[in-house]
Image (tube, rainbow, N blue to C red; front, side, top):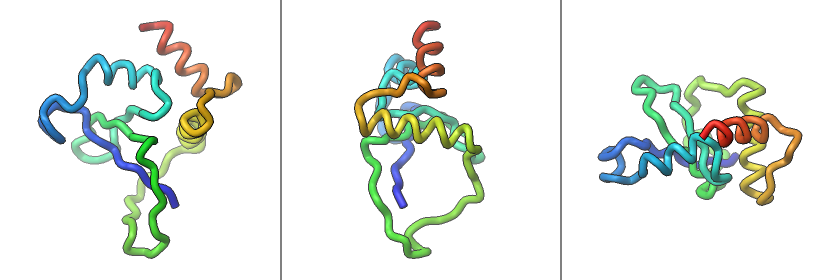
Amino acid sequence: MMSSWWTPTQEGIVRPGRWNREFVARIMRCAYSQYMFDYLPIPSGRESILRLNHVQPIGAHSEAYELTGYCLSAPALAVVEQQFRWFRQGALEKATELFEIRNTLLEDA
């Protein structure tokens, strides 16, 4: 099993000024392969960034992780897998949903 951490984008939560708002805006438009932006499905629902460059294996022992009951839909998981492949391989495949999403978001910028 692989894991990475999400970090909140709001100032002062992790440390003051952690995420520049311009930088977050570029992450939201899929400008970088190692970052993904989302709103976590937790009560606060705050915006967060996934660091794919911090992915690491975790043990299979039942106490090594906690199941939350949240699950990505198949299309959402496909986009996450495309982003991770882009990060690992250094090239984004053209015939993917992420390629289309990224192009649309970068055109609108």
